Length: 425
Ligand code: ADP
Ligand code: ASP
Ligand code: MG
Image (cartoon, rainbow, N blue to C red; front, side, top):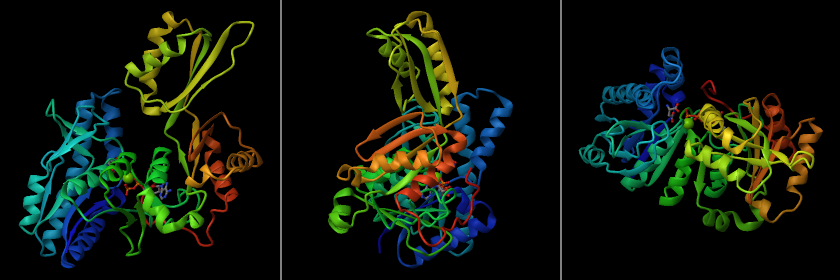
């Protein structure tokens, strides 16, 4: 008998049938003798639909109101799941993020959890009920306003509650059978990974593999929460995210694959600051302006300056959602920095290769670049970490790039991966 936290994603609770199927699965865990705390996402594509709706009403919706709107999606599914569980003869009680004690900072749309005080969840569990918590939301410690944790944030709610409750495991139920060597929607021959180190999972999530929210992986690593990613549509074992030391101990250095997987990201845009005077201090001025606007950067490239003009171009990538803010911030400092113009390009994609074995195996980048060149794909920017190589390509070449790299590293499986549900939106 233990305590299990189960998180069900939007495609698992997309309709009434889905809600009933999930309720059945929860009660089976309950009958096996475990206490169960459940975290749910909004039904199907509800969050996207609510965002579309907001856009129709206001081109720049106030962040506070947008959070108020988006959190309603999770409230619908939490109540429905609780009702379905009661119908099956078990007690269930639903809680908003705020009621569950998820305390955040006040950064609307990307709030960070700063504390979890799950007193009411603990009480519900002690009274024999299943506790259902609305994912992806909390309450600001300063303003007392409702906040959201960023897209995909329900995974983080689940791990944060698992850590605060001292759960034995955090199960993330989704629409594929686990973490694969690439997104199975793009590479049908992607291979399911049985165990992935948290270090590699962090790089995959940071590079766009949205099967797990990045902060959920960081949180699990920091608090030592065992995470099991699996499908809510089959009883099959999924992927265990394990800490890097135990991955090495159990897999053994010989059996660890060199490459864990290929991730892609369609969510970034590129800004080029054209004609920047090539003198000390200008890069600092540019990036200070962007940082002051609260924008997170990813890759940065500075070209060699043209001898004739003494000017250079600086390009960087950032989330598309922050593009407008960054362009406005840069336009404001144009007279001071004295650059010539700005170019904004949101037709880019990023493909990343991740593997802890890169540290000790030469030739990985050579194979990566050769695969892209054989597929006729032009590389626009490159960055690396110790265990990752990422490049920017044209957006319409991204799928081909992912497939080419996946094949070049012999990651293709014999059988096709199953995508059980969802639109991939
Ligand atoms: P949920 O609604 O359950 O949170 P998400 O859509 O957020 O589900 O995440 C699951 C999706 O992540 C899969 O359907 C798949 O398309 C995508 N995905 C991207 N990269 C991977 C990967 N490496 N392994 C598995 N799924 C991946
Ligand atoms: N419903 C939210 C989203 O679509 C949170 C989540 O699903 O994790 O991003
Ligand atoms: Mg998700």
